[in-house]
Length: 278
Image (cartoon, rainbow, N blue to C red; front, top):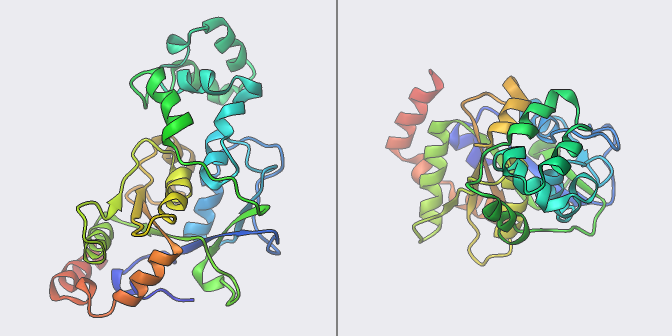
């Protein structure tokens, strides 16, 4: 499967489809079971290297990633049951935001040394623990899939009998401009692109898009402003790029509407042509 939108937008990387399945693709990359790590390191292999990547509940241990990819709300049982009380402090200023600093530090002592400083001082992405708790228990849309695997597959490797859940584009700022304007021609509303700035990178391409898929007029979801994910992934995803993810139904709508759209107009052709030389 080739994407007309990707071609007209001048994308550098092939779009990647997300699928839910009980069948694991042969030769797929997968994190080792019971090993904690950022899933974006693996997802980046699909986005920029054309690899097929798969996750299940045993190989997706990050609490945010479990919520992001569709394995229920991992925050509730995070770190041996410390749950949202621990995570809400971590999302603010770490031990300084904890109501029980002694218990918080006891958990941090068991975290790998390379990560301890981050947990001690916190990610500082929420103003207070109350808003962080609300995000984890109310604001973040949660999906708990019936299938065993969440699979990231380049569009060109999709079989005809497979139906993706969503599609992820990797875009630079100019391509983001073109696709967001294009989305404005498909949705008669002021916010055709949703930007959930507080979500983790995996949640922006997973949970947020899964939720949009349930809407009558689903939107695109902009992501990868997650500085923790960027720190983990490094240069594997070029630093100037973002994710632009859509439910599969919207992807098909975009494909059908791309010809003779703003992406075929003289302004975009001029802008896109100059972007190739940058």
